[in-house]
Image (cartoon, rainbow, N blue to C red; front, side, top):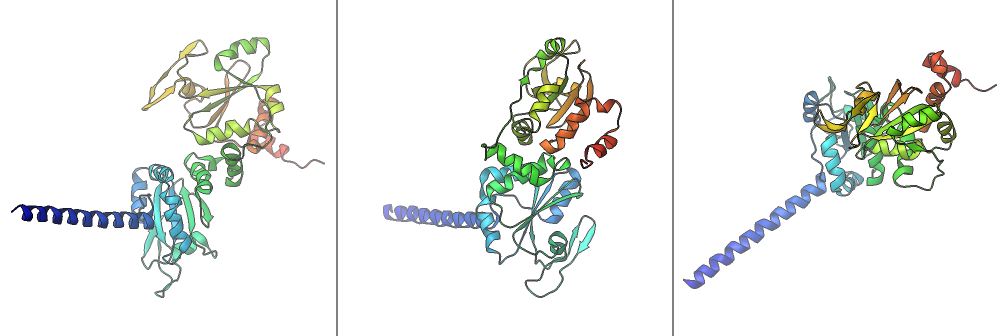
Length: 346
């Protein structure tokens, strides 16, 4: 009896070990094929987008593409990146040679042939004549903005694209410019920086009595990556710093600050608004046009003149500074000013 019991226990252990090995093999096989991203079909992503809009990340691959598989094993198996993608995107795996009929953004796309290794109509829509794999299509704003990246994307290469899409930097800036400033912020910190003076918001009344200037309030947050890019590069760009220091008081305002801030005789505190613990001053200054980042322009009496939403590159911000700093906004519309500003010098 004793031997039978021991034999039975050994058999159970062998079975458990056997099932564990099967589970491990299945897990790593799935990780190899899909990484750690929770991939959806195009149909599933579009259904979810009807309930809550998010950008799409569409991984365009083929079964025979080695670099596609390598991207799954590396980039999409990075736990931090995968978590960010799962939270902020509808990630889609799209086989560029599928034989399925697919509806995308209200149109029907079909396979071009029943023969193997022939591109699907939707792959041709995404890639045109450049049918290279892997390719990644980023789609946002209810299918109105697309950004295509072709080739293998390692961690450092995909990160700025993810931020660019999620934090709406595409609304104000081209990706190449954003990527350059992103790399300066987080990777290449040896670029030449200018010097600019930042003030606290509660210093403004005193500063205005001493020397009146317009004010730029840089609204940012620790969790906002495009805010960091703007603070670390745009305001330190050597083409802007001298003009900034001469014509503006620059203020950094963290939306999560616990400080009590005085504005126009009223106190503003940190409190929950729409479930977020933000200082109420950010809503007052932006006239409830709040975004991250946001740049509020105040006159010498601290009245709001304008609010710039989303990321501003040095190139984008420079004419805006001149428009307000030189008081051109008082006599010219922005279209007239920028037309004159962009005229080639004679």
